[in-house]
Image 1 (cartoon, rainbow, N blue to C red):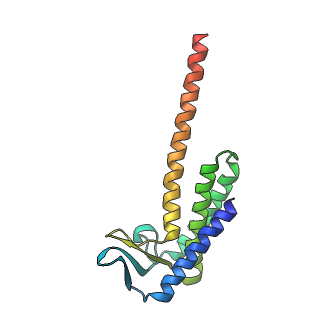
Image 2: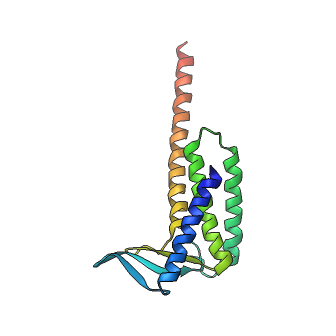
Image 3: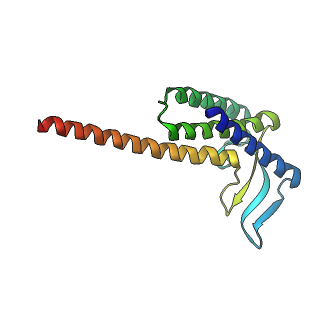
Length: 161
């Protein structure tokens, strides 16, 4: 499952980035809902990390991304089969991180193209990583609360006997 989801994310990410590169000049924007310019497709490059921080740190970011991706793959193997939602989240993270890693290795920067308001420009890979991290955290909080509730119920049952 991880490989399939990751491959779909990588393929869609790379296809959308190449479409932007082939159809828009660097810095050129296309309005998604003319005449409103709140949502735009724009050809942008990022030599740094999220939100444009650490510009020019491509070599460090390649190593960091590879290490984090490897850690995710190791953690994935430790998850029980019935933790399907968490496994999907991790697969989305892997696909997104590899999508941007491909850009860093082949281009020396990441192609970004989604511009919403004044928010920093991002891409499909960024979205997959960000959304899956948020969903994974929420699911882990829910799992922890369930475990605490079960533990508390067991303690109460033991005390009642």
